[in-house]
Length: 600
Ligand SMILES: [Zn+2]
Ligand SMILES: [Zn+2]
Image 1: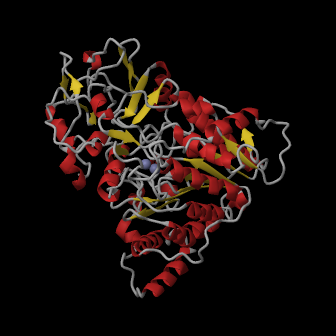
Image 2 (image 1 turned 90 degrees about the horizontal axis):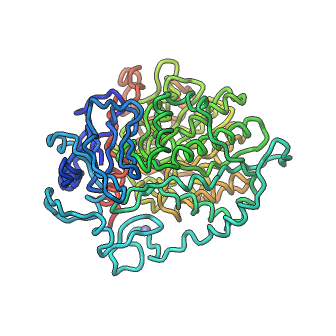
Image 3 (image 1 turned 45 degrees about the horizontal axis):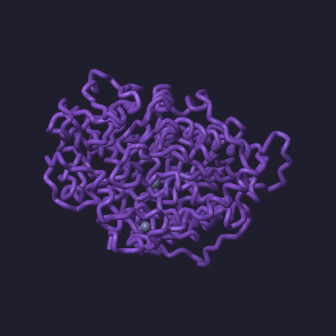
């Protein structure tokens, strides 16, 4: 796993250490093969090569993928990867086509090695130089992986100790039923007469083909079953596809992608279709189908946005993957290849929207989306996410990141200071920050980067938002942009949590009232502190916040702000993204959080 996922052109060494990692990260089970084919530890400029089933991973300083063609026993590089930086010629490939990893880095780089899923799953103290270590053997040894949440469980237990789902989970049981009806469903065409207030859904089964090929000791959380589970849930609720208009699948064009990403990035994703599998970062995989899946995801989002802005449908839900909000101008990361929300925002503007609001309620900061729009005042980006002073992946999204140049004030970050954040904190932040700013901005369309990894039961997010909470947030956002609302799936890894949450969201899109039964939200102490901090910083850009801050301060008995004047404290340059180095890998950070904070 990567120890430091840095933005292009950043320098190594600035990555904050992660104290909780140290105990187990030093297991450092990254292994690769040396010239003799024997396993040895290695890392590729900070991105580690994994085990003896590993791949060569790209240097994150280069916005390209290193591609391993196991079938042909050859290796190729794409994007900016500079062969002078390292030489993959030493890579070995097994007779069965499985690529062997290459030894590419000095031993000293091991100090930078991060936390692997293996470290988190298998808490033994094997010697680091145990060349007989076999991940495949460990996969089956006394453990089963929960279908619902992917967490490992000991054989003797019948219910997952994380989510309580049964070993023989039936969470996907309804997908067959959905499939039959989906195959018969009509797609929107130019001639389709859509009733007023229609809800459109974008989905295509080809996005299920994007999956991790490499055999790992544990399932990758961003897996095809996420879409199957949500589709099955929507079908069981009788709302998809029967009550929704279906958007025809379309691959986004290169021209559209180039409005968001560099040509090198677009090309590096495109090249993955020629390889058995490849990695942009150690947890951002691609297989032969990934480029198409990513283009379908972006294309569906773009067309949904266009349909909504044109008024043909009222709102929409993009049931898509791979997710997008970590994908920046020139890099894929955090399971994201193309930035779907950004592509949709620009498609909305092409269709006539002047101002676009993006609300990102994924538990992780959408660093890619912020980067793409940080200097653009026509796209307002508001994100609620765990941050913890940069110690939660990806490390960006501090409250003082407000955008740059003309875009100052058009990035609004609501950074939670701890895990466990629930409905009340989210809804309180919506009431006191998101909706007031949205009302003042007056967007023509609202796009939600809707990760459901802040949901109760999520193995990575470790927060506590319920389906009713998501329902309430969706309902609140329907008051913006005259109801023109596009929900785009981002993260979310507990299948039951994401299914029930997405289903409640779509019910609101279809006109149901929110199912959140409480009145005024009572925030936690930490949640209140975060909201006050954000109000302090953003009030200079959004005057509507001034009386809200004053009111809350009065309620809190705060005669003087704890945070001081925002401008002098943070200044113009604070809006520059990546001033704070990106954290280690997405998976390692998140699973570590689970193990250390959520596990009983
Ligand atoms: Zn589970
Ligand atoms: Zn996320």
